Length: 114
Image 1 (cartoon, rainbow, N blue to C red):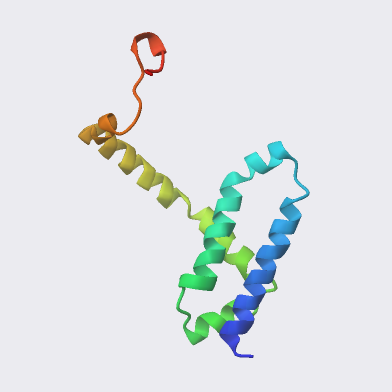
Image 2 (cartoon, rainbow, N blue to C red):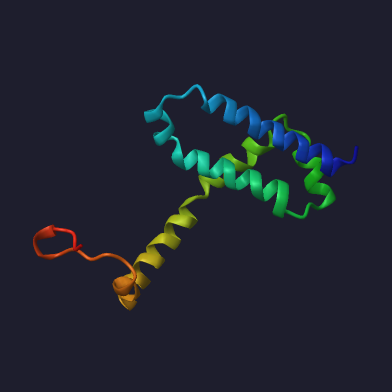
């Protein structure tokens, strides 16, 4: 089995183990883990579908029992970049006011329009 196949198989196993662990979390706990779940899901998809590995990357990630966790943890640590993007998006939406025609508006006094 080549290195890429071994790595992708390991990442799939890591993700299956993660999902199995989540099945033991209650409903409120799952909601509190929403960002973590999203990060794991995005990292899993990227690493198994979208990323084009260099030989050095394969060698490095194969050193770890759980390469998915390694990448996901780093992704979550650097998540502030995404938060900065949300700030830019919110500012652009408010500046352009494009959403006015696309989403329901509130009536006066906070009552939803019908």
